[in-house]
Image (cartoon, rainbow over all chains, first blue to last red; front, side, top):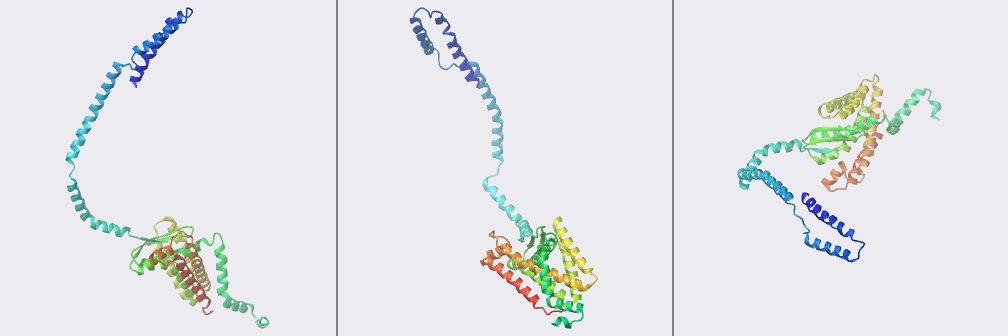
Length: 119
Length: 227
């Protein structure tokens, strides 16, 4: 956002300053007017359409650098968590072991809730 | 012309009662059912006998009752565990008819029988309240029904108890005659729908069976020898 502001301000100032001088000579002939137009066109060609604000770029780089330093510790954490996680094979083994352990409990719960409703 | 030969008017009224007491009670029950407020507890009575019939069927087929719920509008729910689902489903309406028929029949058979039977119903209501009622509304409805039966037991003249029990029996029977028709609402809910899904016999057939049973019970009471 800062970059766009810095681009617009120098361009407008350049244009607004230019016409003040030729207006003074406006009662002579039509030639100076055409000269003004030529000058305008020349100044447009000479001036770059994008003005690079060094300060804004520096700010942008700074913020980017700070963002990257904030995300890096999380990456380290997640990678360490991945290392600790058991493999899929181990996970299925544990799940099947637990399922056998819960069979009796599940049956008793099913008996408890296996009810019929009659209206 | 027999009017001139009967000298005693009380004797005449007694003969009239003996001859038509079934129709008098039936008419009274039909009128009573139309009354807006006083008929409500008797709708609960039919609902209770419907639900307890489901429960008793569950017990007889090896299951047990988990919960009985009664609602103010006369609806009810019986939660059972185990047992034969077909028998339990069928016994709701059929059981209510049997209760109505039994109450009328036993009350008319003997004064002592009427007394014992009303005590038994009172005990059943109290046990239902203690063991199977789980919410405030059900407790309230069961308490009201228990009080009604307690009042009938306390009646001084057992003759009135007999008539009152017969009246209750007819009310239950009338309800079980009309309530199966409520199942034909196109929603595929209730006992008829459950039986239809179990047997592939359409719901309307089950409704007709229950209606026929109730009609037969009513006819059987009409044919009971007058006392």
